[in-house]
Length: 134
Image (spheres, rainbow, N blue to C red):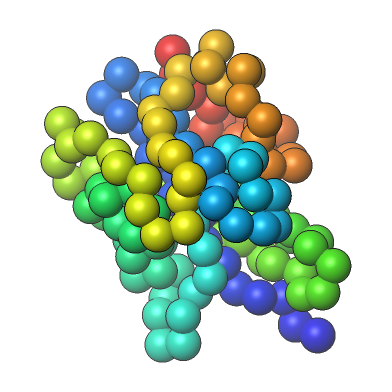
């Protein structure tokens, strides 16, 4: 079975905090991760990440370059997640949890360390140089 194509949005605010959502559904319900989800038929990665960030956080973003990709085994299927750097259209906008997110927040490095994140998230963000900058 081919991996399911997914995207994640790596969004930092003007102070360098990282946008995270608390997952409202399995896999990893209750854990924190970057906003994202499945690529729908007919979408490219950029279109999918803009849609997913909006659905989960209410924030409008512009998709940028790929920062990395991971394979997430969740039994069957396996998810192939392409994470893209995203820039907020309105830097002053406040995120609001929506869709399948239980909560949403911008977190600094200390705050990230206090959260139960999805497996491998912090390690991947570290490898890619995408941890919160404050």
